[in-house]
Each structure stands twice: as structure tokens, then as C-alpha cells.
Image (tube, rainbow over all chains, first blue to last red; front, top):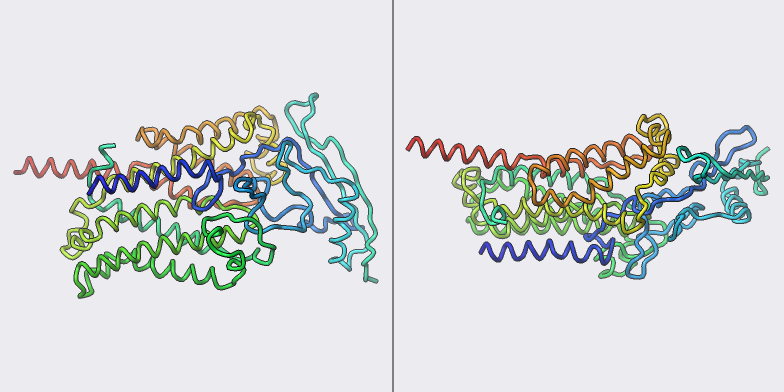
Length: 158
Length: 304
């Protein structure tokens, strides 16, 4: 009786140890990959109105913890259970992981968001790159910044 | 391994089962379908491959799963109460207990699969309770008759009906889960613990008023020390399977790690369930009881 119990429990333990590394993430098997991909650089975005107030806090960043939880890339998969399609900051599969967004991509993206903000006449969007520099091995500061000013073509305010 | 094949009194087993059911209930309450409107992505669970993608678009799946889980969990948790009161035969009660245990495990599994299939991220904290519930269901599967018999005779806490493998395998799953977390970091990048990524995560999501966040951003060396400590601790967690005294140190270390993450990041990732499971299975509650039992036996022998 006890032998049978030990055999079944051992099979359960073995299945977890053997299947998890193969599938990485397939509930209930998991390699617990949270924080697994170390970023090498980071883009920070900021949008402000004419008065300098921050608008659209949730425009750029995915509500998901993409930077925390790398998407499963085994069994032909490239993402999660649901796909967020309207976010700018997505996850690169290779280092430095933070995807670079061109000025045109950024403009197109902001224009799409402005469609949903007809009360907003003007927006100033800044894009900052943070990555290590040899001259300062201790701290991180923006090494590159760009600001784009855009009128809202969908503006319906007074 | 000898420990796995021995039987113990059910006090720790029953209390840990109650705490586990409460922890699983807390997690089940946290699930939602807030992101179900987004297009379906990839399969994140075994059920994802077995059921059609359209199944996960239904609004009913989660409430249904939750109802099944809570009803069966209640039936399983309250067995020591109702088994004494109803007039069914011991075999029938044991059957109901075993069925409710397995329905509870499947209910939790179904809810967790539904949640993962409808999220644009992953929630790893749902993994461990499933395996631990499965081990407890196996305990009831093999010892259901004896458990019910002991309950009927009011001897539930006296007779040895809790097999060591339930506790041993629970420690195994928790240890391997954390070890895998360390291994996946090392496999992703050999320089994972360089301190740079922790500084970038802290800039992106850190609570700048937190003293730990300020320490990380002050000097990359501090970030490197923290990351190296976490990586070492997680990767070596498997040692808890073999060395009971180390288990306590590993639990304290991992508990402190979860608290530090809570303090650093402004995006709150509630790790309460992980903290509870660590404290429940890695602190020496079970050993204390065993020693007490041995002492009681010695006293009885000396009295005789």
C-alpha cells in the first residue's frame, strides 16, 4: 500500500521536474520565469498637455507586467492568454529586451490615442532612453531624450 | 526517504489543509475576466490545448468554476464537523470526502486555467496551491476510510493517519518551484545578477520613496549584491528538501525577498499566498508536533 502511494507521489514530483523545463509555462507546470529576462536598457515615455500636466498615464505601458513576466516562447507560442494590441512598450525577445520605437511609430501611436481624447487640443510627448554609460558605473540617467509636440486633429473643444 | 513512508498524527495535516484551502480561496477570489475583451492569444494551460479557444470567451466559465471550487472546498474543510453528525455509513462518508477533495482540486485547476487563459500576463502564485491540494487529495484518497473512522470514534487527532509523503512532497514542490525560478534566470542570461536590470526595473516601476528603492538606485553595486543574493537563495532552495535546519533559513530569506519586492515596486504584486505557504511548510511546526508526540509516548511508557 505504502509502496503504491510513494510511487504515485514520486511520479507527480518527477512530472513537475521533467515537464516544467520543457514547456516553461503551461499551467500547472511552470518554470516560475518571473523577472527572468534582465533588461539592458529602458525607454520612458511621458505625455503632457499645454499646461504641462501629465495626460494618458496608461497610453504607453502595457497594463501587463511584460517587463516582469517574459512571455512563454515554447511550443510555438509568443505571448500570453490574451494579447494587448494597443500598447507601445512591448517586449523584445532578444537583449536588450526593451523595444526601440521610431519617431514615426511614436507619432502614429499618439495619433491613435488622440482619437479617444477629443477634449485634448495639444500634447507634448517625450521619449527618454535610459541605459548604462561607461563614465558612470553606479547610476542610471537618461542618455537620450526627444520631445514631439503634436496638435490634436480630432480636437472638438472650444 | 524513511520519513516519507512513516505515519504521523493528523493534527498538522488537518490544520495545514485548512490553511491551504483558505489560501486557495483567497487566490480564487482574486481571479477576474477583466481582460477577456482582448483578442485570444496563446494557450497558457493544459486545458487551453484541450478546449476550443471560443470556450474561454464565455462569461460563465469563471463563475461556474468558482462555485464548484467553493462548494467542494467547504465540504472538504468541514468534514471533521459533518462526518460526526450525519447518519450515513463510514464508507459513504469517506466516498463523499474523497469526491469533494478531488472536485475541489479540479475546481481550483479549472479556475486557474481560466484565469491564465484570459490574462495578458502570468500569475505564478497560482501554481503551488494546485500541487499542494493534489497531495492532500491523495492523502484523503488513500486514508479516507481511516480518517472518517477516526472522526467517528473521536480519535482523529490521536491515531497516526497522516503519511510523511504529504508533508515531504509539499516541501519538495515549494523548493523546486523556487529553484526553477533561480534556474530560469540563469538560463535567460548569465549576467542576470549584474545589478543593471534591477536598477532599470526600479526606475520603471519602483516606489522612489522606498528606502530599498533608493539604495538600489544609489549604486549599482548594491543592486548587484541584492540580485546575487536572491539568485543564490532561489537556486539553492532545493536544499530545503534534504536539510530541515536549512529549511527555516531558506524560508526567512525568501519571505524577506517577497517583502523587499513589495517595498520596492509601486506596482503591487501581492505575494501573500506564497508567504503563507513558505511559513506553513518550511517552519518547523510539523517537527515540533512530532517531538511532542514522542515525548508523550515516552511518558506513557515510563508510566507503564
